[in-house]
Image (cartoon, rainbow, N blue to C red):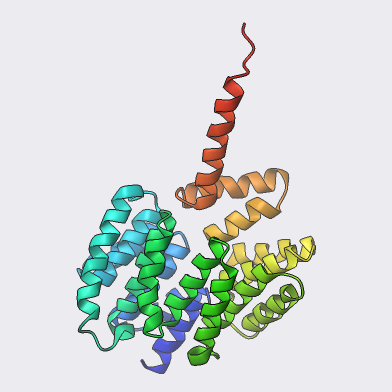
Length: 298
């Protein structure tokens, strides 16, 4: 991987999505792997249609995996249909990975991370972890990062810490592994909150603005009861990526009144399958069902 391609990949991994798209767009003939990163960055920016169209001429498993993620993010392919498509692509991925020597160049490592994300979005956490484990065994940093995210999502901080420790033995200076360390510290709590903030603050120093890192800084500030600083970080993240579901979800939780309502309405629009949207809909339906039992007769 040449220097410019490495830089573009790093921009994606640290969440600098606009800069990633711009950098790859400046290439006269971006590699197939860079095309995937650009499309994935577009998905993160809410440009799901553009992402799918950019890869529509390709028929390889990695491109189809990213298109599936775009369709899922847009709410077009979700539930059992998304899981079935992912399973079919995973079968193809396994066949190609058995003979592929350079996964980063071919995009198979990206396909694994993307399909793990698709499965996780549909609640198939065990299947996602099993798939990502194959990438972890190949020392793929992105598979490690997504694995850690999922382990934290099911409150297995112990396993996330173990995965992080293992990854630091082969990728200690990787920005995405440093980012994952901050996630683990945020879940660990106590003195680790401030350490997480220091790590995230360092990742923003001299770098292109990253909605992922800025959201991490916002969380680190919020859990330390620094609400104004947290809101400022989220405002900056929103200016970097206005349609980023993570930013909108955090704004829905942190802001108050009309601002929170607006953020949640926007989240429903750009990511209708988001877990926060689905969870609130489920709880609202349960409340309405319970309230109906106590309706006063006319």
